[in-house]
Image 1 (cartoon, rainbow, N blue to C red):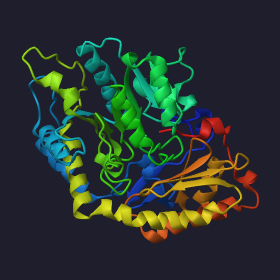
Image 2 (cartoon, rainbow, N blue to C red):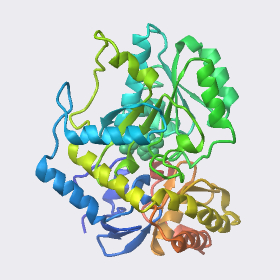
Image 3 (cartoon, rainbow, N blue to C red):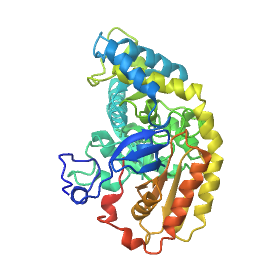
Length: 434
Ligand SMILES: Cc1ncc(COP(=O)(O)O)c(C=O)c1O
């Protein structure tokens, strides 16, 4: 059978896919998905950390269809707008952990990072601080794969190969959990040259790395001391993943901007956005000679995507799913503790929300473990640092968390892991970074 396809997949080793190493998903229902050959799998990662309310919700489909029948979308450039873009911005502003924010809509997380990156630089230029251009990010961080995300990436494979150290110039990296190192780097670069720090409150794709106690609060203080903007990337943590609506609330932080995507629609439509605090938006709103922020995409505030987001937020609220995440978190922790004892496990990182990373010893490939888990009907992903990603939909049953732990434990004890290797290329290529 030929496995050739015209599709060039993101973050994929295409020769392996062409040789047949491909898994095609065709259906979803709650925390389960079905493959094209009829296997029903437990979606232990909620896709790319996005399917928060679970798959196959007719209500979301109906919201999309109703909006499309009325108006698929209308653009929001200049003085034109659509009602859905306005309504969702107001709803987000009302639930935002940043007080009195403005909302800028785009099509996804990478778009939103580009927006926050450009706005950071535009803000300082307009403030007359033309030298404030450097953006600092953390080692192991993932901020999408557009030009800004590639330039900010703390995962080396995602930033390398484009001919210069940083695709967009003037970025810098610091160790992930060392506030003193951040302080020293800002001093070394010169606070008058540093525009912003971009940080995921919990590093996701980089290996589910939790912040050290007090780290994020100290990071915020350092940004304030040096008059550097703080941009929190809540693309994974936003909309309930941590057991609070935003990790900003969980850690009591006060960022200048929050980047969001994924969970705002739970994947039922592509949508991203940036919540922007008053300090940054005022100069663009206040006076008749305020500058225009020359940014946006055709589908900024896409009406159907915004209508779908409304239905997604309704489901989150009506079914109290964020509270459910907080309730399930200790159960996930207990289930993963079973795996932590295994000699092939270096570390289990969990304890906040429905998120866990299981780092394996170098001799046991996390990719291989995901392939063995598939045989017991559990769909997992290998992420950076030979780590397994666990981030199920919020509707997952408590028992399924134990099923995930059980599948991993069985896989780690598989008598001959090598035989299951299939067509896998070197690990470097397999670790998919979303
Ligand atoms: C923390 C974080 N930021 C940004 C992005 C990019 O989002 P998107 O893939 O929607 O462009 C991701 C995607 O995984 C992410 O995890």
